[in-house]
Length: 210
Image 1 (cartoon, helix red, strand yellow):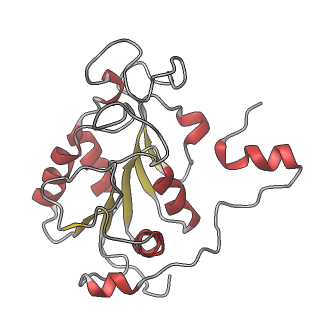
Image 2 (cartoon, rainbow, N blue to C red; image 1 turned 180 degrees about the vertical axis):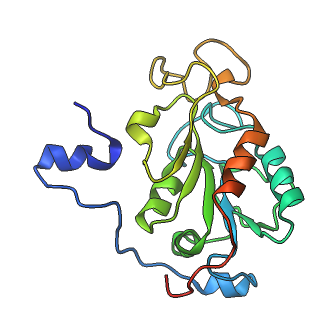
């Protein structure tokens, strides 16, 4: 039907879609509490949907090399604060400046995403939340399709191999359908991802009223 996640329900209900923005209530006091400035930090997330039952510590769509991406970012931009957000499905990423896993409300998370210079993630719910605020994300895709879940405003990184195998088996979110211990679709080169992120953040200042 040539529809995407963002406009599928509009098509079903006969409502003409406008843009991706939503007027959502956020708590932005956390930015000052962490000593951050609006537009002067990036957020990162490596978890998955809390409602999904996964056998193991991670889902097949979770990018496994964010530790190296963070190391490369900090080597190039030690002045750039990196804030990890997420809930209990996330795992700590060494090298981040602030690990907020399980420490923020959804409104606080929204406040951080609203004013982040960039959000870094697997394909998932926080990417959609960031898009509501107009924040650009760098999204690493694996078994879920870019054509359906991607936003053209984001940096969408395609699978390194295969990809698009979601729901091909009942356990696709827990186990690679091809039997790889670590899905080869999520083996994108960390250096390439770091370059894309840094190339899209020419300066770390943005109007505080945005």
